[in-house]
Amino acid sequence: MSSRGRVSLSVGWITLFLIGTDLFVVSPLLPFISEAYNVNPAMTGWMITVFAVTYAIAAPLFGWASDKNGKGIFITFGLLLFSFSNTLTAFSPSFSWLIMSRILAGLSVAAITPLIYAIIGDIAPSNRRGTWLSIVVSGHLTALWAGAPIGTLLEHFLGWRSVFVVMAVVGMIMAVVNFKTWKYVSISDLTRNQVEGNLLRILGSVSVTSIWAISMYALYVYLGAALYSENRFSSSKIAIAVTFYGIGAVLGSLTSGQFTDRFGVRKISKATLIFLSVILVCVGIFFSSGDWIYLFLFIWALVGYAGFTSYQARLAVEYPKERGIVMAWNNTALYIGITIGSMIGGYVISNWGYPFLPYVCSIAAFISFVLSIQTKTQEKN
Picture 1 (cartoon, rainbow, N blue to C red):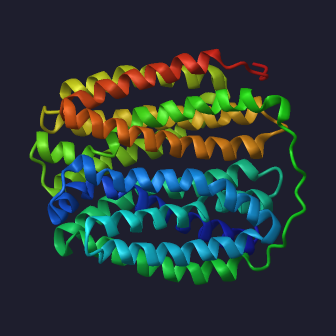
Picture 2: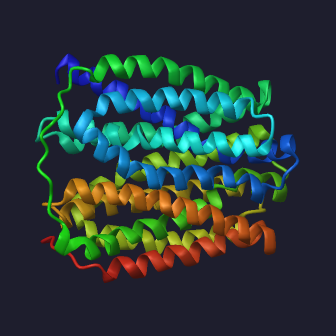
């Protein structure tokens, strides 16, 4: 690998680590933000809802514009807006301003995350494209077990506002770094994939990802608040819980590739989804059983993100001619699922309480499994 390649991968990894931290750190901070603005956790969950809605709407628009004007300039713009939005989050004078700051954050991330994936895909050697993409994706997942817990510990010592101040400063630095890194990348003359005949099939396939996201995020969004309410966990214990979850997510993502190569993408994607439904029932049963919850959070994330990674591989196999477009739709489907999941989670805790959340997520995982076995495949095993 050339030195330029190593620099590109490093910048992409760090950028997605920062973006992932911004997404994942909000959940464990919800109880402290709720207290600061004197609103209930269900209302605070709208921080994630508006973020995800904005992302889902804006990402395709930035993708279209970047094809015409270059991806690097939009990534730089996104990071500058990211820095501003996190500064506003840290110093919002009211809950309304806080929500506005997360709308801007969602807009900024829509200009960063999919374009990082796209630009790495553009510059990677054709025989190494999958490896390069998996490296930068690992930066996003590493934020689960490293970035979010570090942010939670920072809250313990300096308060939750300090977390967003630090991300704003790092975002400004990364804006400069990304501008210098991608300015040499020319605007590519991409061949437009024709998907007219396959659009409904594509939407049906990526709907599996949306329901999967509901099964993961309806609980994860409120995980910190649930542990605080049901188990009386301190911020340090919440950080440990999120660390277990994050390590499980990274290991699940990394190890699922070997299993899919050996047994086939359809078999592994279906097996992980049905197992996810079972493990979520176990999470519900053992949620208030003290330190046992660490183990079940680890297994939940391990299985859940193994399923996500294997299904990504399945889509790449099933749509070889429309791979880029399908992955873009799948990314949007993910955030739509996060949006719906956070709304469902807020409704459940408002009406039935935190203990019911894992069981609702288990039902969503089972629906995702049923949808996955309905999708037709073109792969040959």
